[in-house]
Length: 165
Image (tube, rainbow, N blue to C red; front, top):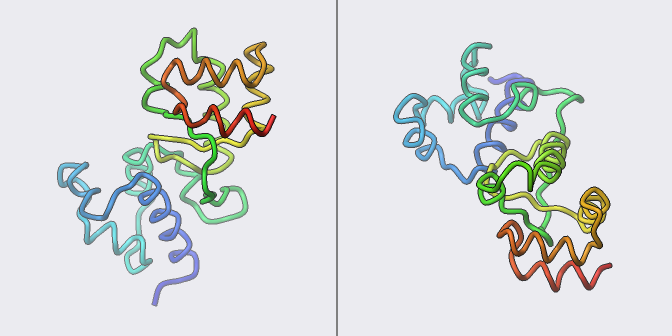
């Protein structure tokens, strides 16, 4: 019978995997067979012990710090709320660093706080957009327009964000 620690570790592994939109078989495919679906599933259920080395390799595969996988108070629980403003992380990473540097640093901080490492999108609150507007020395509405023009925010963000300012 799995220990509570193993179950919690497994739940964290599962949460990161599902945030990235991967099934167990998707992990096997993406890793080109390095991570077998049956093995990852047994780690997630807590049925199989994972070595420190394997855990570090799995964290690297998922692109998250090992500390995000370890049970305890230090690692935040991922948040699963309906997004209002969604930043396209893939598009952000394609833009010049001098343009998106402050946004990228802010996003990295949010990801670390939330334990949200899906790598594709990140939902932000209106308050986050206000803070970013201060950093960029723009009004929230102007920053929203700029982020839309960069392709980082969907045009639907215009109505979602401006109504709340």
